[in-house]
Image 1 (cartoon, rainbow, N blue to C red):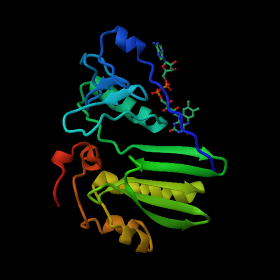
Image 2: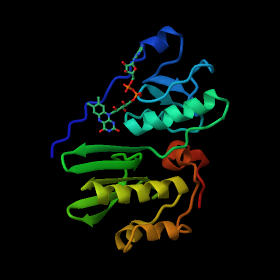
Image 3: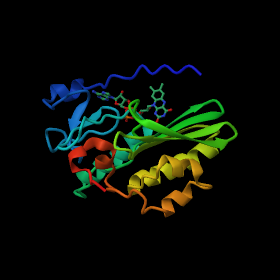
Image 4: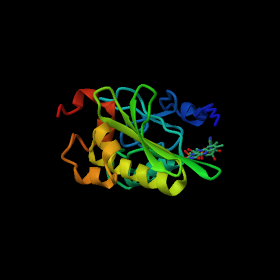
Length: 201
Ligand SMILES: Cc1cc2nc3c(=O)[nH]c(=O)nc-3n(C[C@H](O)[C@H](O)[C@H](O)COP(=O)(O)OP(=O)(O)OC[C@H]3O[C@@H](n4cnc5c(N)ncnc54)[C@H](O)[C@@H]3O)c2cc1C
């Protein structure tokens, strides 16, 4: 398979003309407020920046646009809601699918687990050895189930060891054994965007 990712450029002309801060997208805080607190931004064009983050976060996928739209609507209605969603994306490639939960990155180490029928799931670990993302490739049913379980782990702050990922007879066991490497359930902190706030356990 040859994969070419050319990226996209956010359309920020209107935001710039309105005097909003723009830096690789329309800059928003964790409530998706722009630098004018009466204006919100969601989806591909929004770039979250907040104290404690190691780097700004701008995502280009359908589910993120939906999740952030939901959060913006709540905040506009006065239901104060911070962005703490575990990112999730998919791409269908003929009869196969690529899915990822969390934020995979080339500097992470990976534990691979075959799922059968040519499907694979990868658990991605950051430098301190904490689970940062789960991705998969193969027939949709097998991959979707494994990545969904990984997403629940990330949301709940469960970080199974690579050995446990390879050895488990069923990945759901690893959610039940959640005492293992438990950590903050605030995903935006747990994935390393607030390393200074990361719990030491
Ligand atoms: C070829 C392609 C394939 C993709 N495949 C996948 C995939 O497999 N999985 C996945 O998760 N995501 C995929 N995506 C990404 C996904 O489509 C986007 O993440 C999603 O559409 C973002 O939604 P959005 O509402 O933020 O932005 P958009 O869908 O881009 O909507 C923004 C809208 O604002 C309009 N607009 C911009 N400026 C102005 C203005 N000044 N005034 C009025 N209107 C304006 C634009 O015309 C556009 O209609 C794909 C994208 C592309 C291009």
